[in-house]
Image 1 (cartoon, rainbow, N blue to C red):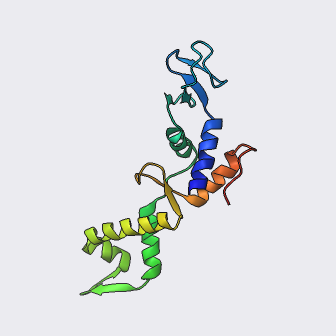
Image 2 (image 1 turned 180 degrees about the vertical axis):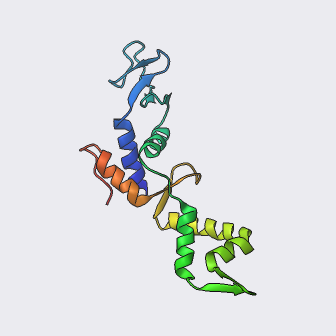
Length: 155
């Protein structure tokens, strides 16, 4: 994951412009022409200016990818593991519906554990401490499309 983050940071740098907040001017050379400061923020496409590239990475991902629907993927995973139906009295449920309806707390806990395992297995990745997840395969495709020629995609 560190390699993906490094490549995304390089892409963010290549798609942003250094910006001197003191003089409120762009400094594409890496030094402000007015005050000669090299302590510059980054500007990204009318989204604003800020220090660091993390916010630019999040913007690029938001612009080009759809966040993973982890709940739907978890439901599919559970349905694959437990394809049978459950009969309660005269009502017949599929396992996913039964688990979700009968014990929503347990369902939420299991979803969280599944999500953690997907992040550990490097199938999913997050850049905002878990609020939003992306499929690693989709990010790798994005990197191949947008990476500058000098940046190599992770293997």
